[in-house]
Structure formats: C-alpha cells, structure tokens
Length: 134
Image (tube, rainbow, N blue to C red):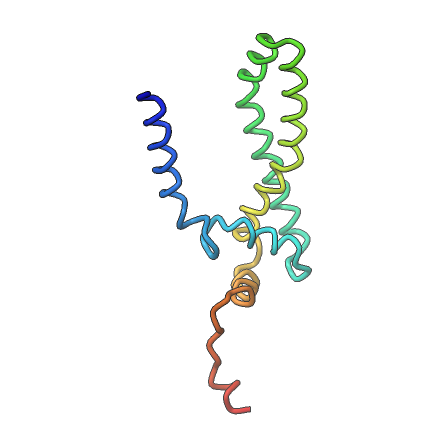
C-alpha cells in the first residue's frame, strides 16, 4: 500500500516538475522539435547533428539497460528474448527521433528557431513601425 502511494506521489511530483518545460513553447516541446525537423529552412547539418546526438543518447540508454535485459532473458528464456527484441527495435527507431526532436531547437540557428516559433505561435505577432507605414 505504501509503495503504491509513494509511486503515485512521485509520479505527480515528476509531472509537476516537467509540466512547464514540456508545454507548448517550453524548453522540451517535442511538437516544435518535430516541426523543425520537417521545416526546409532548418539546415541539414543541424538536423544531422541532432539526429547523431539522438543516436548517441539512445546507445547510452541501451547500454545502461543491458544488465536488466540480460536478467529478463535469463528468467524468461523464450518470452524474454522476444519481448527484448521487440522493445529494442522500437527503441532504436523511436529513441533517436524523439531525442533529436528535443535537441534540435538548441542546435539549429537561434534566429531561425525564434522566427519559426513566432510563426507557430497562436498569439498575434506585434506589428513593427515600418510595417504600419505601408
């Protein structure tokens, strides 16, 4: 019972800690990262660097998971290997894409990121004095 209460309380604390960073316009906005990946104005070099960092992050996470995967494979010989293979496949496809979407806003040129963020913003963009004179 105590374990369940602590797990739920810990989940709420973690959720509250990252909520403002994962919201739209926050530091870890995954939707904005995927929009940058699809945008043609972002340089290919920045996209490749973000993808390379995503692959490296996924490799580190997979190396840290290795002892647990071996334990599961030993305890559940047939099922453990199959489940491990499926999870590793999903992890190697989705992991680098997700990590690159999180990293790309920090790797791409700041002026371009700010311009794309302003274009996607639901708030009206302030009109400059030069645009009013026309």
